[in-house]
Length: 377
Picture 1 (tube, rainbow, N blue to C red):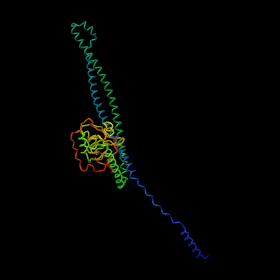
Picture 2: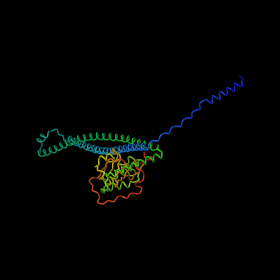
Picture 3: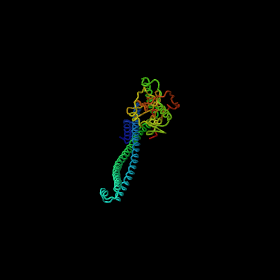
Picture 4: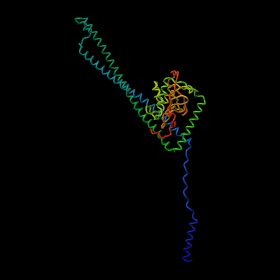
């Protein structure tokens, strides 16, 4: 076979191998990550908000205990200072009596002094004075001992109260960090959602609220007409209405921002009735009433753990600080799952005539759900 023919054959063989060789396989495109169902997103987001609000109310409860403990520490400090002054006075009196006894000592018994005295009556009078001094000395010594015991006990109680205050302050810091962590979870989840997802989630929740409100009003659980409030309830409602549009901010009770229980507490405080700070304490500490008996100013409590509260406005509506990212607004009473209702002034008689406060056009504007960055961590 000639060299030229061999070269042609080799070239043909290489070409044939190239034809027969399998073509390189192109990389398959990555499968798109399936989007989570809107209902699942809503459930997850609602759960995170509830956890954040529960942590907030726990923080609020500790803050109230810490305030009381600070007052107790201050009271004990003042009492201890008074005890020290009293002890100093008793010590001075005891020293003075001791000096008087030393200066008047004669070495003779009162009986011998009476026998040897030129004037027995004067001796008797002198003995009476000496007896009075002895009794005063005994009382002074007893008072001194009591003051020492009181000072020791107050010192022990003051130290224990200070230890409790420090422990509460440390617990409050942990709970504050817990709230911030929960709200950061919400923030991250909101940031990960697209505008379409946010719109879909908010729409689904709003549809749920509308359905829940319809079920509640058609069930007969609410009275057909709203009875008038008490004078205190009227003042509480008007205070709450005046706060419309102010932002929700956890752990606050006005005047620039509120969380849910901060709003209801301050409303009733301005009405002249002190109520507990947290939603759980308001639920457990105030008289319960049926929903059918609701009147303006009553409190509506939500969720099985009593972690949210609003103030009843009337006609199936409440004033509330909904959640982080939202502002104080008028909402349907069924905006959240209702646990029950309480009345801060159960013995107060209702007004004979009642004109509800005028609501601004923006009272019901804005989402109840607050699905946007919180910006208040």
